[in-house]
Length: 453
Image (cartoon, rainbow, N blue to C red):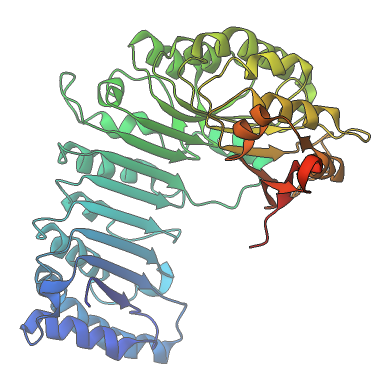
């Protein structure tokens, strides 16, 4: 019944004050035993800009609430997961008495939770006082941090202390909160003040590492570092989304023999990521996107050629999932050039790929479905479209020629039916197709039909 306990501390608004105050008081005094049943704690610190009258009223509430915070949170002895969200108006918050102590008491209370292993911290404010009090956290197994880009070095230093105090850290999720269009994110992450992954491991001795299995990182910087690589050796999954990654980082992974089975990454103008993929003998699942380089489409095509001709032949025997998300059509799309290399991936279970727009009939779509018949383990096929020019918006649905090619595709031979009967085709925009029988007797054929949800 009480698996999730939510403490929404709206210290600068009138909303839910009585509820939050009652929960804190009852937990701190021992009047309720709810705390012993809670497994999941959510603390939300929100505020708004206050006028003078509201500020006085909130100050009284604030003084009372902070006195019992440590005892209230400490009573939640069976909590294993804590989620903390800070979204405050800093100008109003700093005018409250001992506001730093309030934030400190939240983390001091959480520090006392003996079996806490999973922590999520989201900082949506431009400034949160006492950010360094996060360093009270220790022995974390999953750490999730998303924040606006502020007090960067203080945040990095604090996160590095948490990692140093968490010898069993297995999952790390990091992100920057920013409204940045895709075509500008490279400029955003190239600014010198951005968060850097490698700095989070500088407090570890050179001969010490963390057993991290999963890293997701969005809009951070990633560079080569002697402190970083020891903690990447056990990685099963690395998801890199809109980050500024140096070529030397990929070279370092390769040179240190760190080969990751599941990868989400992007390719810009440098070949280093592809050389890493070429060497990655453990690769099983790959999601790869290309960046906005409209003034260098020939370079993008050259990288695609290298991928199909040099990477795929060496990695095809183990590859189970391949998801390609180019920003522009070219050799990254399914075409006559890439078809023979797709067919090398005999163990492929899931494929996402772009198909160019063509006059009817869409021969590339037909060719792709013919190829699917030769990939006996393929169970999911996703078809996308990329842009054809820089000014064109990103398509939110496939062209009608692709849709029609799927709907008109006919399978007659038993071998083809056996190969495709478990295949689900999903089109950009959400339409889902499965193979179904039509007709009777000698007129029986199999066609892909739209599934109505």
